[in-house]
Length: 79
Image (cartoon, rainbow, N blue to C red):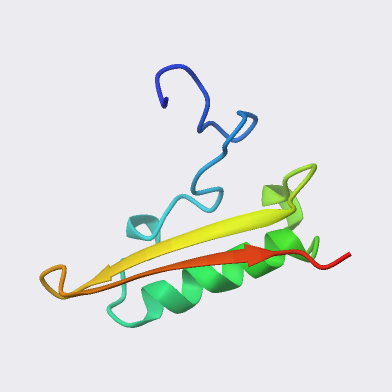
């Protein structure tokens, strides 16, 4: 998918518009918060230069520790 450009910023399913968690230093505990904040910014149209032209839904997946604490959140913009 990455090689085909599907997950590129202008692709069908863009991923990590901010560069991902490692670009932020991967702070333990703050990564899940950061992912939710970035998704919420997209859904509310407040992502600045990273804003997608159309953001109706967002997915957040986070693993903690040795993959013992995992969660997925699906966020949707209200009309």
